[in-house]
Length: 449
Ligand SMILES: Nc1ncnc2c1ncn2[C@@H]1O[C@H](COP(=O)(O)OP(=O)(O)O)[C@@H](O)[C@H]1O
Ligand SMILES: [Mg+2]
Image 1: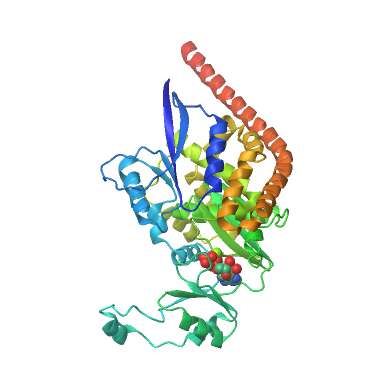
Image 2 (image 1 turned 60 degrees about the vertical axis):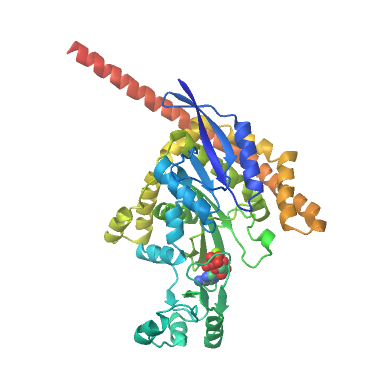
C-alpha cells in the first residue's frame, strides 16, 4: 500500500473566513483514506499568482477557484492545468467564461423551466472606436420602439445586464417612462428586459456544491447582513425537492459545481430568475447560520474529488438533456429525468457512500470547531474587513451567535444523520455479504458440476 498525498489548492480573492475554516477542519479531520490500494492523505494550500511556463506541471489534484470570472491569469493557469495536468477544478472555467446569464436563461427555457419572459435589446451607446459600427448599424440596425417591448411583457419589468452579477445595473421598471430612462442610463451594456415575478411570496436561493443542495429563504430588501434568513419549514418537502432538482439540473448542465440558483414563487410556481452565479456568496457575514453547512459541503465534495481522482469532464455534452426535451413530458417528470442525469454526473450514490465510510466524523469535528475561539477569530477577521471599527465587536458576536444557534439545531440533526448513516452502512454490508455468498455458491456449483 503506497502513501499518497492529494493536493487541494484554494484560489482566492477577498475570501477570508471560509478558507480559514476549511483548512482548520480538514486538518482536524486528520484523514487517511484507503483508495484503490493506496493510503491517501490531503494537503491544502493557497494558490499563488506568478508567471508560469505552460509546460511546467501543476501538482494540484483539485482547485477550488474563486477568481476565474474576473482574474484572467489564474483562469488561464487553471485551463492549462486541466488540459495538461489532469487538474479537477470547481468550476469549469470555459463554461464560466462563455455562459452568461443569457445562455443560462436560453438553456433552461429550452428545457421547459418557467424562466420569466425575457427580451434582449441592442445597447444604447457604443464605444466611439468601433470602426465598422456606422455602416453596420446603418445597414442592419432596425429602429425599434422599446415601449412596445415593455407593453408586450407587461409591467413591472426588470432591466438588467445580460451577463450581470452583484445587482449592478438592475432596475425595476413600472412604466414606459421608467423603461426609457433605464435604457438611456444603460450605456454600452447589452441589456435584458424581463417580466417581473410580481408579486412573489417567497425568494429562495438554492446553493449547490457537487450533488449537495442547500436551500435558503432570502429577503432581497433586508440589509446585507440579514438577507439570508434563518427559517425552517418555509417550503414543503416537495418544493424543496423541486428546487434541489432544478439546481442540480442547471449545475450539471453547465458543470458549475458551486453555484447558487435564485427562484421566486408566485401562485405556487417557482420562477428561476438568476442562476449563473458560479462564484456565490461564501462569507460568514452573509451566510451566518448557513455558513457551516456550506463549509462542510465544500470539504466533503472537494475531498471526494481529490481522493477518488474524479475525472474532469472535458466537454459539457448537452445531448442527454435534449433527448429528455424530445419526450415532451409534463414538466415535473422532465425535471426528475434531468435530475437523474445530474445524479449520474455527480456520482451521487458513490459520493454518499464515500462520505458514510470515510467522513462520518465531519459532523462532530465541524460542530466542535464552529464553537471554538479559532472560528470566532476567523469571523472577526472577515467582519474587520467589511465593517467600521466601532461595529466589529458587535457584528463578530452577532455572526458567532447565529453559528452557535446552528450548533444547537445541529445536535438533533446529527443524531438523525448518524442513525441513517449506520443504516446505510449496514445495508451495504448485507448486500456485499449476499454478493459474496452467491459468488461462493456459484463457485461450489461449478466445482461440483
Ligand atoms: N424577473 C424578476 N422578477 C422579480 N424580481 C427580480 C427579477 N429579476 C431580478 N429581480 C430582482 O433584482 C435582483 C437582482 O437581479 P438578478 O437577476 O438576481 O441579477 P444579479 O445577477 O445582478 O444578482 C434579484 O435578486 C431580485 O430581487
Ligand atoms: Mg441575483
